[in-house]
Length: 132
Image 1: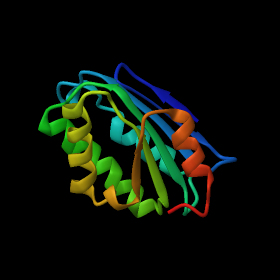
Image 2: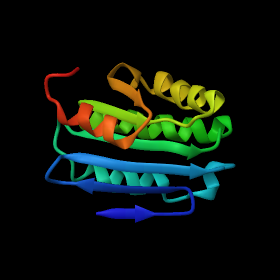
Image 3: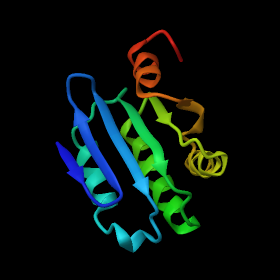
């Protein structure tokens, strides 16, 4: 299962029980992506408790508060669905990274999230069941 838009890509890998997502560009307002929440809900219908998420936000420009609130809502839905671990490939911009961290703190998902500079590092951590 895969969804694509002007600001995101999301897909589910059943074998790994993992959601892969990429957010990119400048997302000005929630109305720019009216299907975002519904796409995420559809993806979550296929996960099993204990699933993981890898989000690539390396090309995501710092969004306004309304968009951060939408991202926090998606994170909250992930908690309800039984997420175990979440990895972020973060932007080089300190400000962009802080915005994403704020959304994670708001939703409560920050305690199971680790930040990485590359997909390889993030995948390695997610694939290791012994690393919290």
